Image (cartoon, rainbow, N blue to C red; front, top):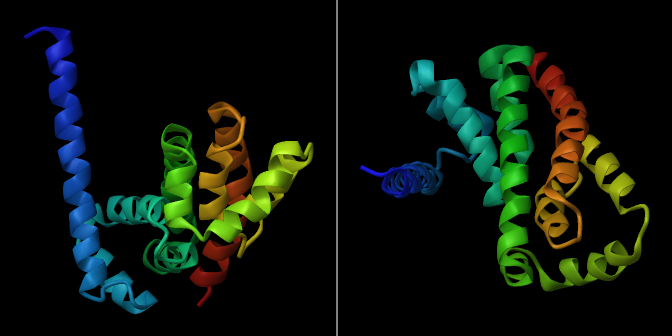
Length: 189
């Protein structure tokens, strides 16, 4: 089989796997497994040695499909895996999800963002971000702080002229501070 055919087959298989995982997580959400720290914790614990991987996937998906607050997964990670283990699971998942959200917005544009978030929210920032020289500093600071609307700004940043490598650097360097604070605080509970 030629490389081109292998590449197509691999793409189809990875896509099917992603849809399968997404379906499992959506079913868990609809079954009420994400209602509280305890229900999510029990759900993730049920995956045994794969629990850290499931938390990483959930944290990535909660950015891409913003229906859950990110701190819920941070709390579960810290309780299940301690502050260090929870931090790494949450950090990897949230960074991956943030970069994927950015890339989705780059590829699919304003229509995707307007379907996922209120149009007023998009319009509020679109004029300012396009002209602002401080948007990068604003984004970095926001990613470092808790309760910032991260999911929206991951998608929104994909609509700006910002390059993917610059966005990835902002996420990788800015995101750990908030996640670390959540991990330490929730591990102490």
